[in-house]
Length: 432
Ligand code: DLL
Image (cartoon, rainbow, N blue to C red; front, side, top):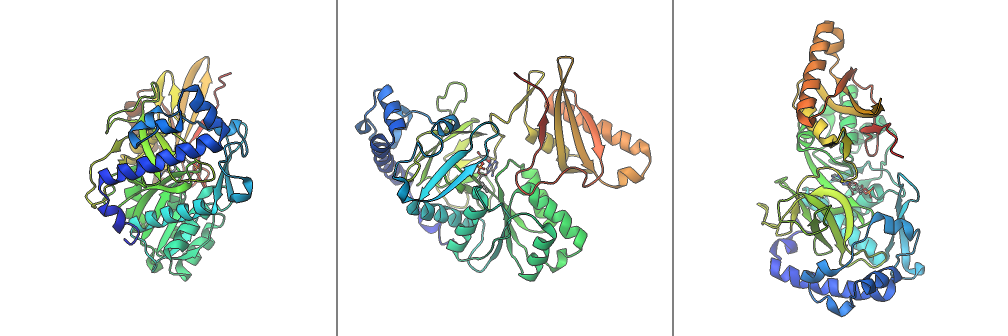
């Protein structure tokens, strides 16, 4: 718990004073060094001196992913390019990538946040951690890597690619921890099973994130591998993984709020909502130098609580993500989240968490087909069993989503596996 001892003692009032000072300094910084923010603040009639404490944050303008795209690649830097030591980028689904940039101090801050997150997951320097996020422009690989080294773990830069080799090295190096997406860990669990080496492994902890997953899926991973699984959250724009992580009580993700100030706002009105109410998560980076962001709209839907956690930490906690406001599918006017399908499937015996949603438009009517991998036995037994299961799944999904669903059952390991973020939805509708 080395990284968290200080945080556990931090009183909320003291924290608010520190956040306020950091915010005032950051606002003055962006006003003077980022023309984009100066213009936005001037449009609102704001001067840096108007921001005196953290309670003034709601006076500030929001920032969106589009603003980052419009200023591609380096238009929002608050320091000269010569002070940047690293860049990362996320591939945009449309148009330009989103580029983020770090000074040396930003990299140190990020490493510390990841080290704290690992520590919160019970990992310490005696652990041997395989990092199985992609290395490269994606922040997952290098982010976890330097955080783990900072904590002092033996860090194995596996990246993604060859799952059998990963499992072999897991056994040979006696890896005790792994960092990867939850969907990839499910695939790794299948390969471990296939290779028959489960009993030889020393794995005890997984730190998973980068995509939405349910509590049921977390428990399933814990059970199938006999390990503890933790949730780690982050986004490139704010730094990468390590913005928040869950502790041993798994009752929400603790935000590293000495560096990242979180607000939850209504996606419609952009007004702050009460604790416990689901809305869009918004972050302000209080200490970042290279690419500081004010009130960045993450599009991630969650709620927040400021109650003290059973673990003793005083940070605010965000609940497991409901998805993204822009991941939400609207099918025949009904809002559908992929996580609802996952939760419903995990309730049923015989199914696996591997599924694919295919949305189409036939005669101006939206259709949803859900392909689900089910256990082998349904394909060897009587056809009736398969039909029965198809009907049960269709009914369960219909009840959960409130729309008719065509279900297609497929054999185990038919759906394409992803080593990074899982592709759960194919939307064939054309909206233009
Ligand atoms: O996914 C950073 C990361 C790497 C986080 C490794 C955790 C582990 P981006 O590629 O910029 O960065 O994608 C950020 O992924 O806005 C969420 O929608 C989603 N996301 C990340 N972590 C979680 C999580 C990395 N634990 C976007 N639960 C975010 C749900 C997550 N969604």
